[in-house]
Amino acid sequence: MRHGFVKVAAATPDIKVADVAYNTEHICNLIDETVREDAKIIVFPELCITGYTCSDLFMQDVLLEDARQALHMIAQHTVGKDALIFVGVPLAIDGELYNVAAALNQGKILGLTTKTFLPNYGEFYEMRQFRPGPKKAREILFDGEMIPFGPQLLFTASSMESLIVSAEICEDVWSPIPPSIEAAREGATLIVNCSASDETIGKDSYRRSLIEGQSARLICGYIYANAGEGESTTDLVFGGHNIIAENGTILASSKRFHNGAIYTELDMKRLLSERRKNTTFQTTGERKLMRIPFELKSTETKLTRTFPSRPFVPSVQSERARRCEEILTIQVMGLKKRLSHAWAKSAVVGISGGLDSTLALLVTAKAFDALGMDRKGIVAVTMPCFGTTDRTYQNACKMSQKLGATLREIPIGEAVKQHFKDIGHDPEDHSVTYENSQARERTQVLMDVANQTEGIVIGTGDMSELALGWATYNGDHMSMYGVNASVPKTLVRHLVHYYADTCEDEDLKVVLYDVLDTPVSPELLPPKDGKIAQKTEDLVGPYELHDFFLYYLLRFGYEPSKIYRIARYAFGGEYDDVTIYKWLETFCRRFFTQQFKRSCLPDGPKVGTVALSPRGDWRMPSDACVANWLRDLEQMKPEK
Image (tube, rainbow, N blue to C red; front, side, top):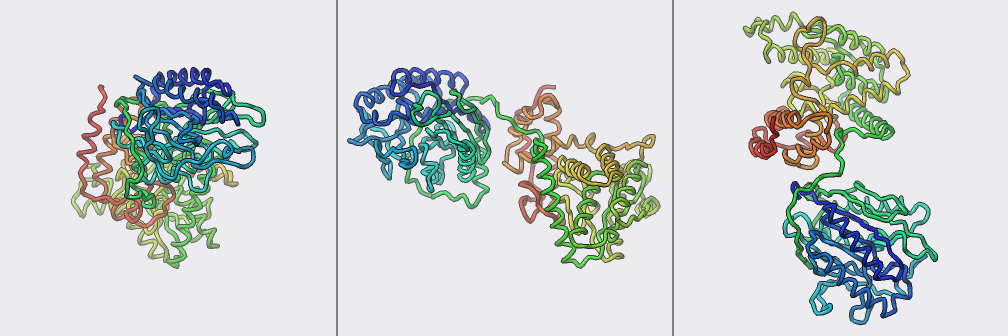
C-alpha cells in the first residue's frame, strides 16, 4: 500500500433467493477470487446472504437462523485472508430485525453496521420487515461476543492511517442526509455501500451521478456493490451495477446484468491531500463515533488504474473541443475586462510565429471583437534578431495580417549589438547573456510601443514555462496582462488547433497549422542552414512529461517518488524509466530554483484547477530548498 494506494473490489455473487447454503458458497468463492486479485477492501451487496427479495420470508426463523450461522461461516472463511470484507445480512437483535452490513476480518466479525433509512415507497416496503438502526452505535452481545452495532462505525487500518472505512446501506445514500456525511466528518476516507437497487429506465445514470456526487462532496473513496442476477424477478430486475468512485471520478463500473467483481486502486493519500486543501471540508474535531481497528499487511500495490499522460487535455474529442472553447472564453473575458478598465486604445503583442504568441494574438483578437473595437488597434510586433528563421517570421506576418491587426516590424539586432558593446560582451559568446539581452530588448520595445499607442502589453508565456522558469526575468517574463499564464504547454497546442479547426478563413488555417508543426524554440541562437537551431525540449525536456509532473505535484501534492511511479504507467512505451527519472529530477530542481520568477507574475486569468499565481493557487518561498524532494526521488533511481 505504498504511496497510499489500496486495491478494492465491489463483488456481486451468484445467489438463489432464500438458499443460504448456495449463497454462502458463492460468497466464499468470490472472496477467494477477490483475495487472489489482492483486493484489500471487498464489498458485497445488501442482504446477499439470503437475497434481498425474500420479502415476508424474512420473518421466518428458519431463514434468519441459517443467515446467522452463514455469517459465522463466512467470517471463519476469512481467516488468513488479508482483507476487510463487508457482507449484507438480516439479523434479529433484541427482538427486532435489522438490515445489516457485517464487517469481517481475519475470522472475526468486527462490527455490524445497521441501515438507517428504510425505503417504504414505490416498489420498496422494507419497514414491513425491518426496523431502522439505532441513532447511535453501541456494543451488543452477539453469539457470546461483544460486537459494535449501529450506524457510522469507523474501521481503522492499523497499517495505514489514511484508510478509515465506514459503511452505509443502499437507501442511506439516497437520503437527504446520508450517514456517510457524519462518518466522513469524523475521518472516514472510504465509504462502502452494500446495496440492492433495482433497474428501471434511466436509473443507472442517476445511480452513477449519485455515487460520483457523494464521493466528491465527502472527498472520499466510495465502493458501491449492488444486487444482481439471482434475485427474484417477481416484480423487479436487479442488474449488479457496481461502482467504485474517488472524489467525484468513477474509476471502475461494471456492466449491468452481469454478476462478478470489479477492481481498482484508491489513492488514500490523494484524498487526504484534497481534504487538507479544502477549507470548507470541516471535520467535527470530536471522536463520537466508535472506532474498530483491523489488520492489513503493508504490501506493494500493483496499479491497474489508469493515469492519463496528458492530464490537462481531455482524451475525448468532443470534450476537448468544449474545454478549448471554455478556456478561450475565460481568457477573452479576462483580457476584455483589463482592456476596458485600463481605457486601453491598443493591445501590443510580440509575435514570434510560435505557439504561445499565436494563442495570445488569437485571444486578443476575440477580446477586441467582444469589446466592439477595431482589430487595427492590435499592434502585432515582430522583432527579428539573430535566431529568427524565415519560417517563423513569415508565419508571424501572415497571421497578423489575416487577423486584421496592425503589423509592425522592429528589428532589434543593431540595438542588441550596441548593448553588447555597452556592457562589454563578446557577440561570439552565445551564453545566457547573449540570449537574455535579446529577450529584454524585445520587452523594452513592446513596453515603449504600448506607451506610444496608449495600450497595454499582452503577455504570451504559458504555465509550463513558468513552472520551469523558462522565461527571461524582466524579459518575456513581464507584461501588463498574461493571458496564457495558467495554460500549460500541452493545452496551448490544442487551443491553437481548435481555433484553426473552427475558423472560416482558409488562409489563416494554413498558417496556424504550420505554426503547430514548428518546433518549440525561443529562437535566440543563430539558425543552422536556415532552420531552428535551439529546440526547447532538447534543453529542458518534453513538455508532456513536465506538464504531467506539474499536475500531480500541484494538484495533489504527490511526492516525486510517487510521480515517478505513476509516470512509468502513464508513459509506458513512450519514454523509458531513465528518461522519465532524468526529466523529473530536472523539473524538481528548476521548479524550486525558479520560484522567484513566479513570485512577481503579472496578472492573468486562472483557467483550470492548477495555477501558479502568487496571488492565487501557489505561494512558495523563493529560497525554499529542494533537498527533501530530491532525496525522496533518489530512492526510485533506475539502473542505466
